[in-house]
Length: 326
Image (cartoon, rainbow, N blue to C red; front, side, top):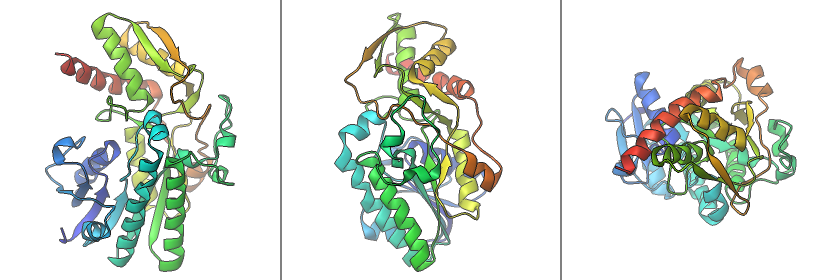
């Protein structure tokens, strides 16, 4: 590390990071891709990037990572779906070491622009108690009552970005991601999110002929889900934009978990017998993205219909399930 590059992607071995590296390379940019996982464990490995394994929770590694870079996309974090973040609060909060050291290193090394991927988990739990939730506006993060563990780390790191801009002049951009999904994501092992988990369960049912599946919660909890292509477009747009305030980046198409299962069953061409596990982690009762601000700032919002994104995601997950059971 140390040579001049256009962009550093921290967390490049993850789902969103892997897709982002590919997009940036396609645009002709030079990319340093960094993750703490061994390269064989990265979701995607792009030969055109400078691929580096490093522990960005260490300040010396963070400094080396951003040296010579114009821009930094900071996606690195210890996280997963609700099952992971509810049972690993300390591990999720330790991501603050990565967030802190990457900001400090970016300032010290003269990075021009710094993007931080925050989360809808920063929003106050008291505003998410009903499945018929009012869509969350950016100001609803305060008074603070974030998701315990993961959400507090994200909210704290958002504030650090703000103060590094105010105190040191580092240009920072923050997007609050709402449930990103798509091919090449985690689909098994405990860190997968709802769309991938449902796709896996339905694919297993279709392949085995046993059409019984387990649903976490009562199925009436609601969410919005953003397809990866919308996430990538919005991320680049916010990074290059003029606003330094945190912005929702998510679909406003609200569905219940039962409706999500309905759509995947429709794609698979089967119907499943649902068994509801009421003691499983399920998060807040309802969460949706209010996209008023992103439309005002950029004249755009994520708009790929859930059924379209699920068709592509299910096809990919089905192939992974089939290969795993051969």
